[in-house]
Image 1 (cartoon, rainbow, N blue to C red):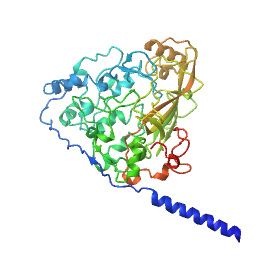
Image 2 (image 1 turned 90 degrees about the horizontal axis):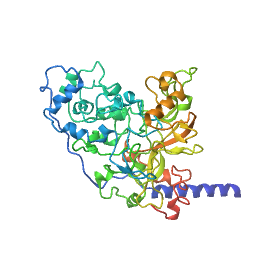
Image 3 (image 1 turned 45 degrees about the vertical axis):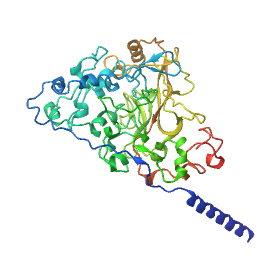
Image 4 (image 1 turned 180 degrees about the vertical axis):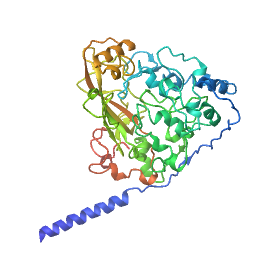
Length: 470
C-alpha cells in the first residue's frame, strides 16, 4: 500500500512539474519588431527589343551592353565572376590572400584546378575551359544565367549554353533574377541537387511556407534579401570566405526586439535567430551529408546517385536533418592549398570561430558535411585531384596518376604516396526558415536529452539551471 501511495505521489509530482514547465514555456508569439519589407520588384519587358536569332551567346551579351553599358564591368568585379574575394587576412597565415572557388579545396568535388570545364558550368560566364580564360573580356559575361525567364536556358561544360538553347527566346524573356535563376547553380552546386547546401534546393522554387516562410508565404525572391547594387550581391558563403564583409543579417529587415516575450529576447545575445527558426533542414529534398572518395573506382558496385557512383565514391544522404550547433562569430579558419594536416584527426576545412567567452559569437545551426579524401602521406597535405579530362581519375581510375597531375597543375610537390583522410566542412544555415509555430520551444533545448550539448558549448550544464550566458 505504501509502495502504491509512493508511486502515486511520484506521478503526481511529475505531473505538477509538467504543468509548471508548460506554463513557463513561452508559446510562439507574434513578431513585434518593426519589419522592413522589400519594395515590389519590377522589370521592363524586352520582348520587342530583339527580332533576329543569335549565333552565339556572346552576341546576346553584346546586345545587352548596347543599353546596359557598364553592366559587364560591374559584374567582372564581383566574386560571382572572379571566383575570388578581396584580399583578406586568413587566420594562421601571413599577409593577405585572395581566396575563393578558384584556389580552395573542399570535401565535395575537392577542387576546380584542372577540372575547369566541369566546374565552370556554374560560372557566370562563357568559355572558362582552362587556366588561360580571359577575365577581362566583357562579351564572355553571361547575362542570361541570372536574367532568363524563358525557363529553357541551361549551361553545360565551360559555362556554355546547351546546344538546344533558344538564345532569342531567352533574350526576349529577360527580367530581374528569380529563385530559379539563382538555383541553377546554388541548388545543384557540388555535382547534384542538394549536394552542398542543406538549406538550398529546388523545393524553394515553388515551396509553401513550410519549406521557407519568406519565399513560400511572402513570395520573396532571393534578391529581395540579397539586395544587389551594381551587380554586387551581398551574402557570404563560408565555404569560400573567412569573414562577414558584404554579409547579411536577419536584423537588416527585422528591427528592434523581435519577440513580445522578453524571455525570448534575452536569448538574442547568445543565440542566432536561425537556431530557433530553422529547427531542421533538407525538409523535402535529401542533402548529402557524407562523401567517401576512397570507395570510388569499384566496378562491382552498381551506380546509384544517392549511394554510390564509380567516379565519385560512396555517399550518405539524409532529410529533415537536425542541425549541429557551435559558437560562431561570423569568421572562420580556412585550410589553404599546401597546409599541413594531422591525418590522425579530421581536418576541418572552415572551422567556425568563437566560443562561450566571445561576446561577438552566438550559437548557430550548421550542416556539417563529412568527407574522406586523398592526402599526400609524406608531405602531409590534402591533395588536389585531376578528375575530369584525359589522365584524370574519371578517365583512367588511377589515383596515383590523377593526384600527380593535380599536384602539377596546382604547383604543389607530390611524393607519389597517398592515402585518404577524414575532413569536415561547416555550412551555416539561413534558409528554410519555418513559421513561428514551428520554431523551437524552450524544452527542445532545456530538458534532459535536448538538442544542445551544453558541455560541448562550454557550459557546465543547462544554463537555465545556473543562470549562465543567454
